Length: 206
Image (cartoon, rainbow, N blue to C red; front, side, top):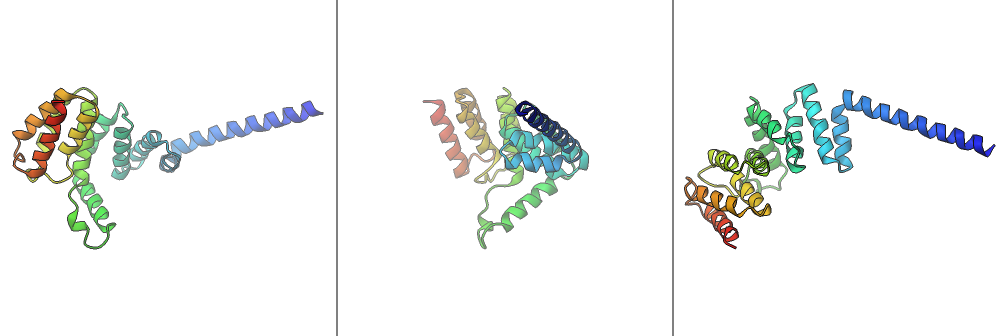
């Protein structure tokens, strides 16, 4: 009798597992956006980004691609470079960045929005440059950031992101090269740019 109960319980558990796996598979194919939100809620950010990309392919919604790019960059996914290049190539990229900035400004307390110093566009460019650096293309990362650099050198921009990444990777030669590129840039006279150059040089000369 005891053996029969155990056997029945085992069959029930196995059946439930099979059903769960099947449901997971169906949701992955037919409801990637739902799976994206679920995996994100349980901390599986990299997996969530993969579902976001599937949702983008299914719907063409640029917000899913943006999320997938962010997740790929933060989890050091091999396909991050290609995802960002696709993102940048889309006709709606500039409009999407503007919408993100407007949404961020609206979420701040009254009067604070005017002090915003970064942009989603520069955040995205910074992520891409860091992806290039981690892939071993430091020269390409610097060239990309210099191309996107604003002469006003806002508080948060792609060059700052790349500088911090170079330091975190312990790459002194790269930091020296980035400092040199910033010295020769149109933003070299800006106080913030000078601060970043000093930080890079100090690290490179340690």
